[in-house]
Amino acid sequence: MESVKDYKKENRNLYMPKTTPVMVNVPEMQFVAVEGRGNPNDENGEYQQAIAILYAIQYTIKMSKKGSYTPVGYFDYVVPPLEGFWWLDNSEDFSSEDKSNYCWLSVIRLPEFVDENVFEWACQEVSKKKKIDAKKAQFLKITEGLCVQCLHIGAYDNEPKTLKLMNDFIAQNGLQSDLSETRRHHEIYLSDPRKTEISKWKTVLRVPVKPLL
Image (cartoon, rainbow, N blue to C red; front, side):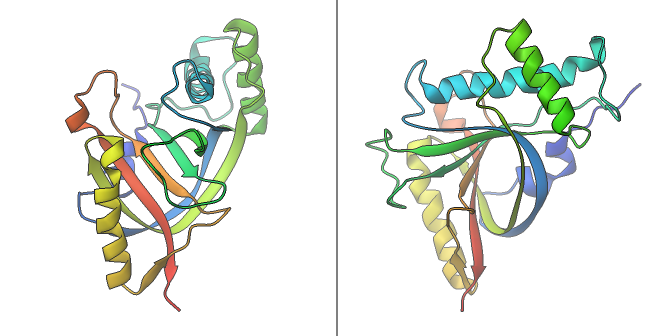
């Protein structure tokens, strides 16, 4: 029986942390990405449209094995979880009250056999067959490097409690936050909010750090 690659199981240290903060060194990975801004909860808003684009491209690549075009080096895989990099233009103080100013880069990890040519093919297939405009989609390689991460359980609006644990850990371990235009607050969504009770949502929170000078 052909094995199916599952990144969550192979890279448990990146996707399945405990509810206590830990340091992790995140290597280069490649993603399908869509950047935008605005409240992610707006029904049929920019964020929801971005997610539709991401999954359409991902599943087009995954299911290519059943079509007339199979990428060189193709292997079957479990589609990795949705992830997001978040920031504000003029502040680091995220407010659960007003999400209209949120900036985000929504991503899903791509398998190693995907290159620019495969990605472009998938975008064209999505536009042609699914009638979804994929022009906003980007093929990105990201190396996060040294970070502190922790598993948050519960509503997204309660993340400040977990972030406080992480900030305390950072201070206690000779580190400092390294948020910048190239290193963002990062979340990995392990639960489907449509199918999971809100108190049981699991989200990996990841913050870039550097040694305290």
